[in-house]
Length: 173
View (cartoon, rainbow, N blue to C red):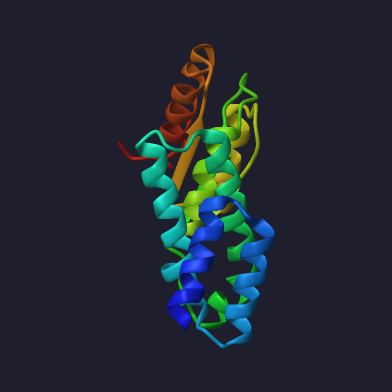
């Protein structure tokens, strides 16, 4: 019975059916299925299949985004139960789009997938100056910084952030 419910949740994630994911995850919660099982055996299973379909060219970025939103809706329901169960975060990741670039679809997609994998993801926005990024790193103390730049003209701003992190002693390379 539980396995069939998990299959239905995974399929709803693949289909990007957010309302169905919400309904099915709520059903699983009402049946007292542990949140960590819902996450690993249903939600992440569905997103893993999305990744495979994307890799094989059978799914495209807009569809992956829809599936990611469905995944996120399920995670939002079980997040309190995961915390109560003592499920530890895999780490804290700060994501950002560097100065001069307003494109954030990719960084949001990556962030959703990382959240699904158990990371705490904090997106600090788009078009952020190196100084602002470094200040957030100081404040939030993440394990990982994920920077995005779609425009080749803004990629050099990543180097500026890295150099500033080195100078401030936050990055040891």
